[in-house]
Image: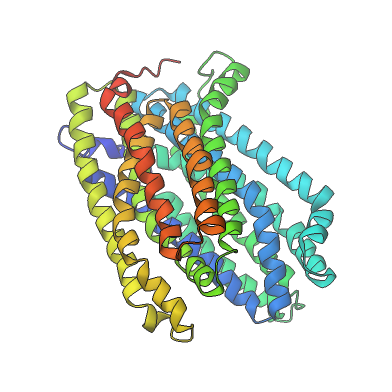
Length: 459
């Protein structure tokens, strides 16, 4: 690994193509899918300890998710900023993106760790259904909170490599840490190899050890490939403080978008609970499938945003930007078709996948088919627009589209459909599709206006 390795945007003849996007997107997509699978694996390992242990882990994971999500949100912003820097080829810009990203993530991780240590016990006691679950959740959370600092470093370094076009390195780090997580968790949960059985706390210890391995690998990669960047003197705005303020101005709208989306999702989930038991079960089952299959289109859009940022950093002419985005957009529709095919297969295979469920629940799952066959297409096209606009620095506009569509449409429409109109579950799910159609004109009108192609990254 050397710093002279060409960036992904240099692999095309004149400009990056859909194949270039694919070379960036598949490692990120695979990593995201494995990450979702890790949650399932951890739950499976703890499930052997009984419902109390499983509930405790779920509660602790939900609390920890807010801090980890904040780290991920700021890391995604840093990923775009790094791509802009990589496009300019300015080592000072690259160092500034890395330094600011590390500072922000470590502060977020440190605040999360402090809050858990100070108030974790009270939070779990207030949210847990009984004292036993609260005690186990607090012990798990106290240990797992160390993951915050590891993820603060790991996500920052992963985003830096992604922004530079080297998306395989974060995937390798995850593939290295995953078996470590599973193996150590099994040993520590059940007390194998002469070690004490730690139960739920053992799963948290396994996560801490795994993230240390992951971060160690990424630090070694950084020291071998980016030594000249790290040693570069100076900052983008002359001093670190104004450089950090500029980075925060870019990153905060992206982070705010994440928090709004997370909160809106939780509110809608609470509203779904008012559906009939079978309808709620069907909504609960299809949610993870939508999330996992949606990873295909979302990572394609993120890879597109990385390359757009690099092209803007190079000040490529508008015809080059147009030609690349057209190619990436065609690929996005192919990704959407694949996601639709997978979701359709889930619906049509409901009787095979969930034979033990009530027939009404399986019928409800199958009724989702028309919505799920369409959802990925406007969602993927909106994602291309959003990531392209973010790459040009238009983060505030993207934030407004997401926040207002969530709180002026999705949440009220879901409440109206479930609590007042009491429509069938398929119409409740259709709110997700209609939300994408609501966002569609605002995203595409802004993109077609073309100001993003003339964005300057001078500041």
